Image 1 (cartoon, rainbow, N blue to C red):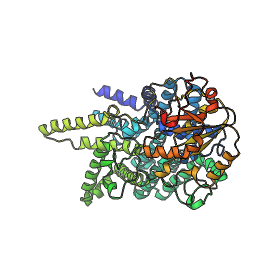
Image 2: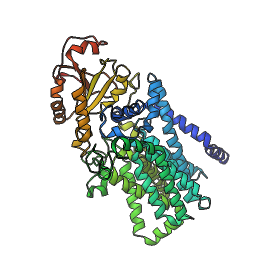
Image 3: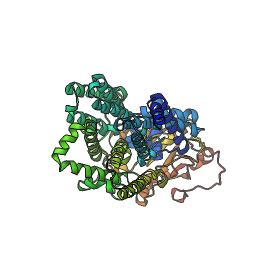
Image 4: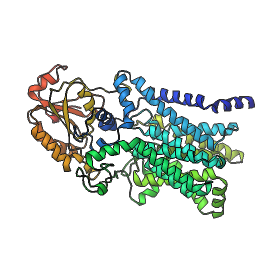
Length: 561
């Protein structure tokens, strides 16, 4: 057994081999599951990359609401995969799964810092941490998807690995490594701002745990400088572009500071999921569904309850044992830094977003402490041992079965193409009006077939997020109205049926004038099942030449989805 263990440890210490196995595993899982965060992909992930490559900023007027203005760099890889392999979804999602595999590898490397593979017990601990971690709802169901949280999760974990390693081995601390960790996190923040809580938590943790650093001031400054440089590398060019167009390098955010005429003078934030003050203290117990949900869809994952209960219990034990707390943080520097980071990250996430999909890093790292306690709390008495083992197996079984007990955000396993929109042909010089959202995802597909300009109308998220209906206010409204008034060609509408009757009636009331003389059909596509298209009656046969026309001219309320 000792010889076998040494062989296993030798193999696991081969970074290239371990990384390759993780990458292949990630690619295999994603090629099979083919998860896609359909709503955001239909709204902006696909469109933003297309718009950037085709110079359509301010040519199409706010087709994807606030998301129209996000940095498109991170969406380019998937866009090119669709361009070249659209008819082979298994290839696209297999390649997309490489990110998931890299995330698993980075998580594995962090785990081995806490569980050095010196015996079978620690090897089992590493395996349990990995399986409990990657089957987390927000990790598993975003693997291979276009939400990009897996990509930024991998980059964040890579940076954290270097920070954790520097804390564990003080003699190896080096300013360039702190600079590099900051650089990685800065680049990640520039690609997707949802990691802001990880960046801030990392910086705060280094400051709070300055005694763990051999040269605190130098290393904290190096980390901060790296973060700034990294942010400018991936987002500096986009900030300049936003300044040129809208006189706000963070548009539409911080507009209370920059006062762009394209938006109201206030600092826009998405506060939809942030719970009331008192609920914040018990949020993990209620965040799965209902009035205080932390996700766009209902999900079932007890990790929040388990991890939060464990954390509270351990925290209270330390809090009421000052001497033990002092000794713990002094003697366990790696765990001390870990706890400070986790508390900072969770509190920041809770107050900035409270959106479950962004919590990947915290949920993954929580599995490390959970499994650690499983072994630390192992009882000594025989009867208690059997009861403990049974309960532990039951809890872990419930946690790792999450992929089997949830529907997730959506998948395309039954689609022969990654992106499909029926081959309608819009006449030249068409004005495409998009009502509600997500609808912008059809633009890249339709653009391959004809030339048109798209205008966004009534996105409705202003009802949930104050000030987010950009196209209905300020200079955007003026530009859109001028384009519409000067247009002399055909007008085609694409809308999205809203399941809430009140919202749907509001959309239709805004469309009423444009619907006159239009015939409507459900749009056959795999982006969003609720999309429909309304065309001029005299152009119906031309636009739907691929269909067998039944001669009927349907109204929106007559459509069957």
